[in-house]
Length: 113
Length: 113
Image (cartoon, rainbow over all chains, first blue to last red; front, side, top):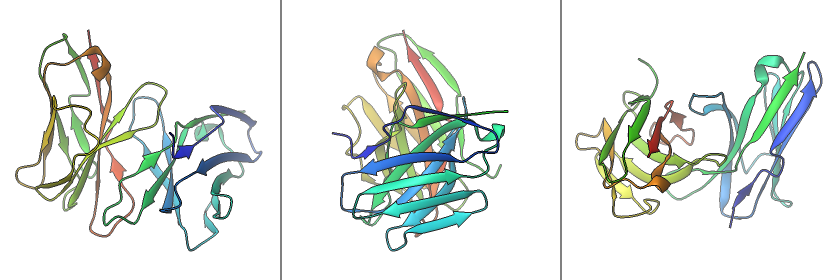
């Protein structure tokens, strides 16, 4: 069973608009969440993270929201740019002494000019 | 270089052949992880090293998979008697002491024919 779920395989938005990528998790032991961005033929690149003690973290155009009661997090990108087109992975870790990551399947974002 | 380096980038193997994949982590990073990413899926954990000690190998799919990090720096993932189902991208990641963020290499794409 998938512990981290990204139910939208793809998302298309226009340049300048907001992109919202969603992620749900089932394991209540997860306490740290990360978003990675991946271009073709490259490895995942860290984008932004949030600890379970917070409900929001912002870095420039990127904001991650965490709703612990719903076991849901979302990544907001505003304004979206064509260079944001990539696959976005949601990942989670539990406080196990080291931080093995459990990933979702990813959402492909396409930002059109 | 400053990032995680993996080699080779691409490897084609005949079924039954042994392969060795190399990872050179970020200098000074004590934690090193290997992940397997099948087509259309998110990365899945294989094994974890803290310095030279392999502390978790619960994700290795079979005893044909073996990983080592003898001097606590470079790591090698070895797959013996490769099978078609081993075809995937193998990602290496490293992180510093106490860090939750993992930094990934570009991966090795293994194709078993």
